[in-house]
Length: 489
Image (cartoon, rainbow, N blue to C red; front, top):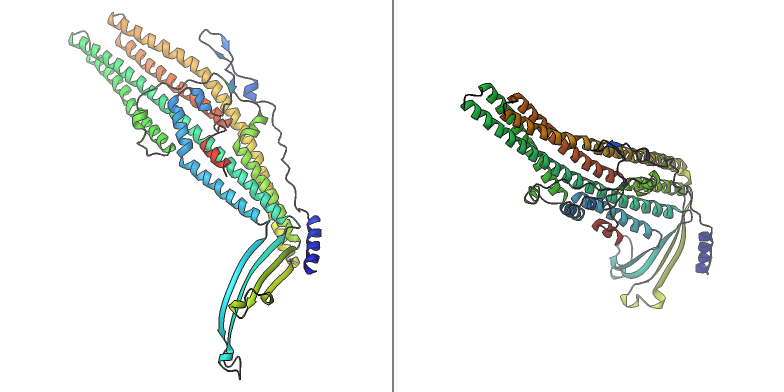
């Protein structure tokens, strides 16, 4: 009868159960219908002098394949498989997932088993007048107990909801780390190839200036030159040669960085990367999409929203403390003074209890915790809104930076071609005696500056494309090693 009454009471209570605290609703964020730079693209003059609109962009998840560089693709895949920052982010996700599993267990009864055997003797003072042997006592017991918190007001459900949102935020953090690592690998690789191109330009110009110095020395030996001309030619050669060590150092730095990004020692990739290769080809198309699509794609926005969800659910956890907690407990077992009689019918024991815990006199502390949870939720809302604005700013800046860099490239390319032609003509005129050495040296200096600026500009265009892809969260395909590991959990 007792069990029947408790069952009816519990069933009635569960039917009337509610979940206190606010339900999460995704906040509305006002965003423009399209990006400013995508709506009003800047035009750039081509080699024919006509105006050309920039290429249409496309947000490809595996964007690095658009550069058509197998070595870059290999480095990205190695980084996704072995980068230590990604392993750290994955461990954070594993931890959050484990905490979620633990929170879900709170919805189930806690079952324990116990057994005890004792042999005790009371003192003569405890049992006066009792013979010594009669003061001895043995007892044996074994039982299974269960306790179950009846989640009538949703405290446990809100806690599970909060932890589930935290787990989703950790998964988004992992995706954001993938975007960042892929972007850094691609950017560093592009910078490496750009530096190697600038190093080639410096060596080539140094060779040309060395040939000029040889001609000046020959003219001096023939009595047709001066020490002044020789000194000026040698000074320009040494100035150009001085650029080479700094560029070589930067090349080494980028090689070391790439090795660490793929989880290896700094010297591991030097043999593979030291051979010069051209800059990767820029993709023909890259569609920025709309700001609304960006909000759904960026993992940092997803992480901020999930943390807002978690903080909202924790308001319900704190609010549930305003109401009593009901706990159902039970015990079934056996107790005897002789081990042979432990599980006989007459040795059985049982207990069924319904407990109520209500700290109604502690209402001030409870309301203080609710106020603190409200403040946390307000802060997470502001952080989410700020994350959206920063993502839009990041994308707009990346769009304009890339468009202007491509426009700049066209001018720098023409300047590099024309300066090389001017330097060649200056040497011909110098050999024919129609120009002095100053014209040659000035033309060679301009050639070096123009070619170096063009190589640097092309590097900025390529890194600008990488930055744009990263801003569009185009660095995490649907089937990566890290994402597959998430799916298995």
